[in-house]
Amino acid sequence: MKQFTIISGKGGTGKTTITAAFASLAENAVLADCDVDAPDLHLILKPEIKETFEFSGLKIASKDEEKCTECGKCREYCRFDAIDDDFNVIKERCEGCGVCEYVCPAGAIYLVDRKSGFAYLSETRFGPMSHAELDTAEEATGKLISMVRNNARILADKYNRDLIIIDGPPGIGCPVISAISGVDLVLIVTEPTLSGIHDMERILGVAKHFSIPAVVCINKFDINPG
Image (tube, rainbow, N blue to C red; front, side):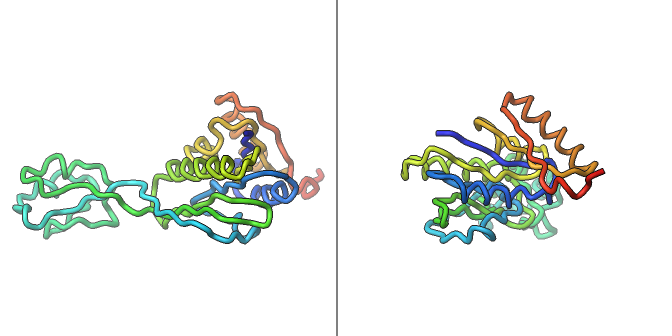
């Protein structure tokens, strides 16, 4: 099984459009949208969702009201100000670090899974597709990308597909690394602008660091002929 990731150093280069074009040309492929922070491959392929999975990226603190003595230790040590004056957890601020659980003398605080998004298995007119969407302001992007890729491999095994085409996220950070790790080829989509060239060089450096073969597509090549 071969894996092929299409990425870009910056957004707006046409990465997803080119991914969809490859999907239409490929035979015996599974598609994976790993741009989970802002997925849009589904807008082109219009997948029919077959299975949905809840994704829990991080933990969140929860309080046992009966055990809580309101000693204030949790509030004292929380660096994210996620404990209010009544010693309740402010979910929007909690980072799931666990320090409150550690310092609580009564064992009244514990960590639970926090829903961070959804992953999907779908069918498209070009074949099966694995994709996901992270909830607004949630973290653990890399973990969700790993889930999408693992689901894509499961689909490939199930349907005897020999190629996985991955629409990766833009940039050079951890999400990109999660999307390109272990693949056979990276296609970098860029544009003939100063920012496009600059970001292309950065992502080429990432691919080189991980010893992943990379090729470049200059999309919209005629917008800056000079």
